[in-house]
Amino acid sequence: MTKPGLLVVGELPAWDLEALTDRFDLHLYYAAEDKSAMLMAGRDTIRAICTKGEIGASAEMMDALPKLEIIANYGVGYDLIDIPAAKARGLRVTNTPDVLTEEVADMAIGLLLAAARRIPAGDAWVRDGSWRTKGMFPLQTRVWGKRIGIVGLGRIGSAIARRAEAFRMPVSYSARQKKPVPYDWYPTPAAMAPQVDVLMVAAAGGPATMGLVDRATFEALQPGAIFCNVARGTVVDETALLEALRTRRIAAAGIDVFLNEPEIDPEFLTFDHVVLQPHAASGTVETRKDMGRLLRENLEAHFDGRPLLTPVA
Ligand code: 8YV
Image (cartoon, rainbow, N blue to C red; front, side):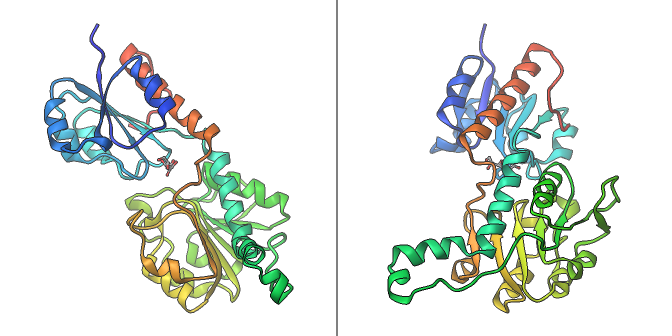
């Protein structure tokens, strides 16, 4: 039987490509020199796309593949997949929730600690001999016991909250609706900002949260506030964020996601009170293997006529 064609939009680890090859005829879009020629050549055979959180799938790509049935996302966030376009074309869409929740929450706490305690700067202090020549590293800021405000209390926000509780941090959250949790609720990040020492962004991306963490939020922060983002760059007004970093209204920050990745605003690189990560919060071998497996199981379920494991549309 002919294998269904699968357009692999973003690079995947070798173990995933190998496993997918058993069931699918792979078209490695990310490696193709002439991408439109690849789409043209696959018009009659490509029935599935696998993409990534930071790449998505446009209506144009869907239109270029008339035999397309399903888009499987390697990531929980599918904000860059044009869902209305997929629905209008009767396409199914899946993502990889749950398997990456704890990993992203680990990175959130890691970034918070790294930013507040300036762990990368301490490492440089040892390596460049400053410890020997200048002595003690400057004293930094405590994390445990500080008040944390989480923007978005979904799966990942909740996993961050559980970790924060272990750090004896009073937890607040902002969300459209109050949830049955023992944390203080605020309707907006701006309303929550004056009440917290740490602002942690964990809300899903997409049109509903575009610029949700706005200038008013940054202006309402307490002096010494710490800012972290493991969600999407789009959730934050980046111009206002850069200004708050420039003026030191934000005393320290840990940031994994940006607008225009990987061509991020170069001003981020100039700050010595910010710890940067290359959108790597889910990036461990263990979690990426689980994400790859779930992506594959969704595709296989679709082509076997079984219910999808984690459909989003
Ligand atoms: C990326 C993510 O998808 O899950 C998400 O929404 O942003 C990440 O896990 C990951 O970088 C894979 O490309």
